[in-house]
Length: 237
Image 1 (spheres, rainbow, N blue to C red):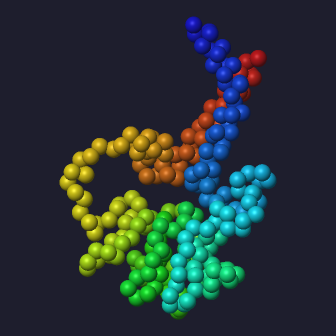
Image 2: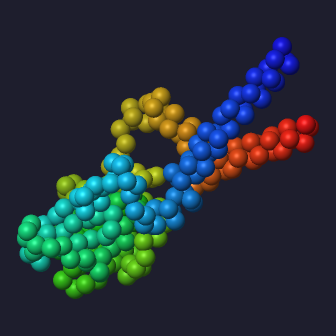
Image 3: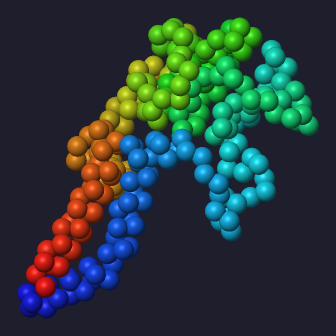
């Protein structure tokens, strides 16, 4: 039985080694750190694929807002921010704009002063278009003119100004302290879907650091096992 198991293990390994390598290597591309340079690299669409479209805005347009103070339309895209005076005008790139994570905006609305609030996993920023400045919502300091990593110090996933007396900023990891969690929710079990996601991402094993290293390390382990197994088998011939 052991001999038969090793025989089938060897045959299956040789048959699927290319597929396994493909899964391991392409899996690296879906999470940091490999995802970051790939997301910032521009490549032409492959002919015949769904991305090969004559529409210049295909898979690029994220959000649209009207700025009543500047009298123009704003477009949030994967290429940055654009403005246009009317729907028929030619969009113009906005150079002075807040940093946005490669995963796009989660918050884009005006505050009481009429400034734009732009929130993503890179943080939350106050954008005064008339003065041409962008500041960090939390520190008040001038925002850095870089895209930065996909997750900043404050990964903002939501915002609301609908509660009296206070603004509600929702952070991806910590949630918000603006609202108390109902007692019955604190004891609710995790759904099977969420548990599967945490196992898949590795966070159930090593915490939030898995977001950056788990897929990369496991993929590297797969490649190492395949390569060393191939070398050992070749050496035994």
